Image (cartoon, rainbow, N blue to C red):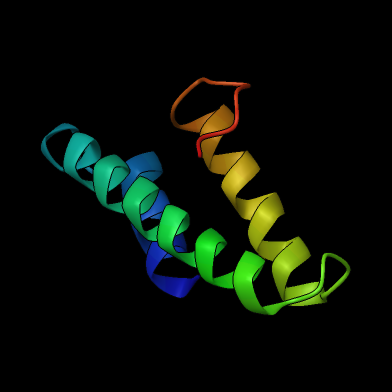
Length: 70
């Protein structure tokens, strides 16, 4: 999750040259983290819930999307 968050912050606050690559890296890291969390953590686990929240913030704030990426 930290890797995904790092790239999300780079996509949000980095230079124009860094933003697109950081967004792509963040999306990939969030997808991997979500797959891992869904496979091994209960839906009410605090780490899984925090990950879902951060991924939602990324989708809405960086990708300007309200759809869930699978």
